[in-house]
Length: 247
Image 1 (cartoon, rainbow, N blue to C red):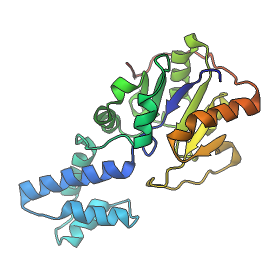
Image 2: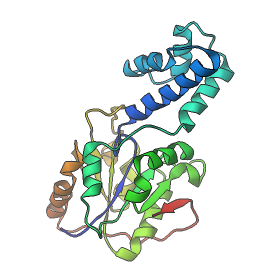
Image 3: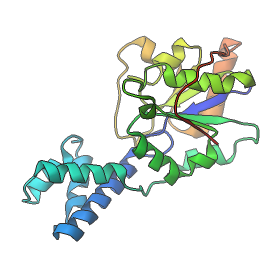
Image 4: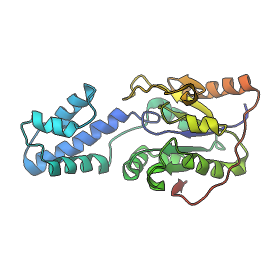
C-alpha cells in the first residue's frame, strides 16, 4: 500500500470522552467538598451524565444536592471542569496503533473544543510526543471549527513536501468528513461502541468512505480503500498563518 498520512480526531477517537467527563466531575466535586464542605457532586453529575443528560449537568446536580444553583457557582464549576488536568488514557487500540507505527509514519491531529481543554487532554495522553502535527481549531479564531476548511488546509501545507495522500479518522459524520472528502482525503469513521454521542450524517456527502469500530482495523481498511480505487489523489495546497503544534 502507498503510505498515507493519517490525521486523527481526538474525542472518542483516541480516548473515550466519558473518561474526561468523569475526571472533570471529580475535579469539580473535590473543589466543592474542600471549599464549601458539600460532598457528592461528582457522583451525582456522573449519574446524570450516564443517564444521557449532557446539558446543565452542574445545575441539575446542585439541585439534587439541595444546593442553590447560583450562576456564579455553576460558572466556577464549569471552569474547573474545563481547565483541570485530566486523568485520561488512550484507548488500548489507539495505544497499540501509535506504538507500532513505523519510524517513517507521520501522523497528526485536528481537534475542536476549547483550546486549553484540548491541550490538557493532549498532554495527559502523551500525544505531543506521539504525533507530529496538531491543529487546535479553537486557536484559529471564532468560526474555524470543523467543517471549516482552515484546519485541513494547514495539514495539507504540512504534508505537501512528503507528496503522500491523507486520511482523516474521526467519529462525527455531522462535521468531520464532508470537508476532507471534498478535498480528496480518505475518511474513516471510528464508530466505538463506548462513545458518548451517536451521530447521524445530515447527507450522503457527510458520510465517511468507510466505518470501523477499532483502530486495529485501520490499516486493513486503508488497504481496502486504496485497492478499490486504484489510486488516491494527493493534496498540495499550501496555507499559513495559524496556531499549530509541531513535534
